[in-house]
Length: 112
Image (tube, rainbow, N blue to C red):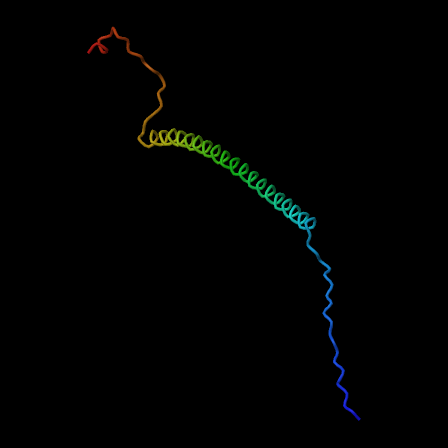
């Protein structure tokens, strides 16, 4: 009996190309990516514009509150000045004036 050759299995490498990139599909993908990038850019620029508006609005509010604060400080200083004057009058023993006597120019007291 003769020896027969062992049977070798041949593995075929028949892969099917299921995804092909042609001119049309490449153009479609490129166009889609361009639109997505454009939408992202527009949304980000819109957010930046809104933030800028909010910042300028807050800066205006800060300026208004600063002016109001200055006016209130000035008013508080005026009120403290009047009240401190009244306290000093009472401390020094001064009395309120009941009758005011005016001196005319023609009297001897005014001439001296």
